[in-house]
Length: 412
Image 1: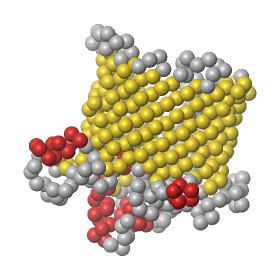
Image 2: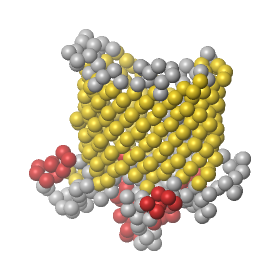
Image 3: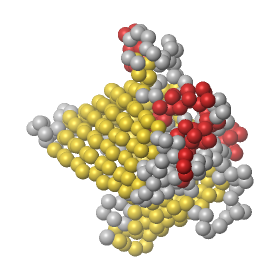
Image 4: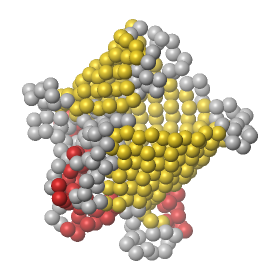
């Protein structure tokens, strides 16, 4: 439950689990989940007239099956096989269907660290546009990616590239460290996450040495196998968080997140579903879900297509002074700084744009304890909004100009 698109978004899941499915401590988990917004969403379509599009109710549906195979000679280590299917309807007049197969190995390096290696991942992504998307592309996205919205042929080519069915064949290495389980109350809790991801190397081998047949709609310079486009990119991401108890009822917490991705080989762009996004209850709380950036872009619709660079910092002071459901509850004061940027173009990251186009918010929120984690009710005010002509908002500050975000569990 959250308010990711400005309205209440709620859902549920049904799961089946067998912890010894084959008699050798193998674990099987199957989950079906569905979520929907309480009503139609038009916030991101402000540049269109109501008659230009059909109202959209954002919703998500997913099926996920996972089998864990323990390595009995190495307690804590296991292989896993995952199969997923998901459909998503977005408020930017797009719908998508994703099918994914993944094989992984997870190794326990010590009491506080773990290394995960996805040694096989194959994802098929199909996208469709809803009525009005072409006009939204012209008004909100075309200039962001260097396309003249009056050039009909380039607009059509740009839309085709966004809607192309494509494959993400990926390898992924992730390292996690946390001393949360072992830290004494007076010690600082640290969490570290490092990720390296590569996509397209196996597909490139097939493209160059096995499938040399020409296909309609593709040239020799296009990345494709068997008539389906494939992605080629490298992605690096790191994040660190800390939490320090100052007293039995107060805590200081912070986090930083840095991400970079870029295409290589035959690819010229990165896939939208793997990019970085900013805004929302677990990101920049002065903005709603995925409505910030890239850079100083003023289009919230364009923000929903993500970017290839992300920088974020967050700081919280948590004060707990009463209990609810026998869980600690209270208030939190916070601030967030950061944004997403493109690699090239008008919203690319440079030293100048870093100084000029950073976003900054501050606010306060309630934390109401529950058995599944604290319910978060955050109210944030923009201090520096790069999308505005006058980005410093302090002079125009008004109490009612807050952004409300709701979530479950701490932001970090």
